Amino acid sequence: MTTLRTTASPLRSRVVVVGHGMAGARVVEELRAHDPGHLLHVTVLGEEPEAAYNRVLLSEVLAGRHRADDIRLGTDAWSDDHGVDRRLGSAAISIDRSARTVTTAAGDVVDYGVLILATGSRAAVPPIDGLSDSEGALVPGAFVFRTLEDCRGIEAAIGGARRAVVLGGGLLGLEAARGLAGRGLDVVVVHAVGHLMERQLDPDAGAILRRSLAGLGVQVRLGAATTGVMRDADGRFAGLALGDGGVVLADLLVVSCGVRPEVSLAKEAGLLVERGVVVDNGLRSVVDDRVYAIGECAQHDGQVYGLVAPAWEQAAVVAARVTGARPDARYAGSRLVTRLKTEGIDLASMGETDAVHDPDGGDDAEVVVVSDPARGSYGKLVVRDGRLAGAILVGSPSAVGAVTQAFDRRSLLPSDRIGMLLPGRGRAAEPDTPDRMPRTATVCRCNGVTKGAIQDCVLAGARTVEAVADVTRAATGCGGCRPAVEGIVDWLNAAEPHTALRAVAPDGDDADPFGPVPELVTASAAGERRPA
Image (cartoon, rainbow, N blue to C red; front, side, top):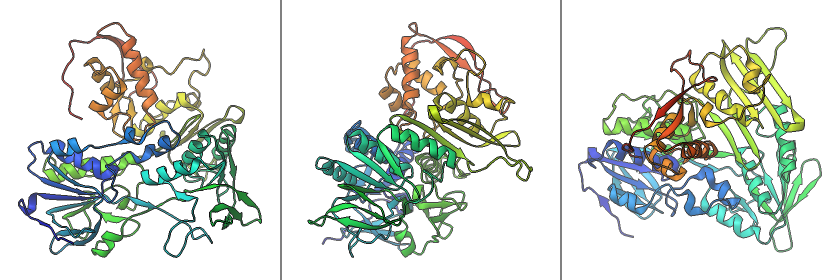
């Protein structure tokens, strides 16, 4: 084994990123966006042999709607062009904070002036009898669903399977279940809690979601504790034994019981770790201000975020500080909106969702619910001090845009709360079309891209969703906004040449996001695109 110690540039200018997932890849992009002259020497260490990819869209790969290459986030050419020393399949195994070095499994010792931890999470495997061996390897025919390698293993097993069981009824488990059903398998979800997605939904919404899934070929067993794994004569997975004495027979098992932040490296280095690496408002370790942490391994103000948008917001803050572009950049936390990305179901959940109507006035929350189980729709608003504190929307795609915007902007809500959940109530239904959307509306929450930014991009010459994504990054996160982006692009392309209806809404808390004023705008010659 050869030991390589890199000392090619001044120590202070050396930045090492540990982790080449979605957060790690994004912080590298942000660093170079603020450092076009490549004054910083950037090294990124990736444990997986794969180049960075959009982990959120793995369910689309499993469903056969995307290929692995479709979800790539970085290329060798980009790294070469931007002077990034990208080392794939190079797991970091130790950090020496005194010497300011990182050692890899291959024996390389890399010096750093600034260290950014983006180690993400690992799939949690419950201690179920027979699920794994003493080394932690799962029984043949069982898989976790976290990486491209996991996805390939599941795809290979699909060919010889007729029935699959998914252990866990959270967000990722349901996306996996829908993907497997779309590949022709009978699918059963086994969930230990009394309703699906209990962290994001209340019981009524969970019941409607369960009914919708049944219509798409996914059956659900709720309140079902799993006590053991059954094997066939060849030692392969054959089913689950449940606590009530029942069994679920299947040929394939996908374990989706949540994730755990990957913090072992940080703990061994002496950093303060609770659920994640504890960081301050600058996302620096509270123990060592030369070490930053972002994404699923970071704990800010007691919160560990498991979604992509917060990780990318954090990446922007860290890059601004490290490059000196904004040395006082601060992270103030994120307002989370969860979207279930599965064909046939439209679901969004945000903020406080478990509040219930209190007729005695013990809780000052105003709770508005509209439920139509027969149509598979459910809407809930939780309002405090006239502003949206939380919401659940199942099967209500026309309401998502306005509700999400009100949540993001913390704006005062209109007095007609039900009108937010039932757009078009009391008048002929109007389609939720791009021309009715205000320019200030956020279309892509992962990247903070507004309708106006997409519109300006198209008018400047980007005529496809892919071209818009290259410039604005819209639709490159969770993928939930892609239909909206496609709608805006198609609407503008269908307009007269160089002409489009631009919807304008004033900025500020008093802006009305529900009633844009149409204004005819004539576009000039295509302008410059801003760099992605």
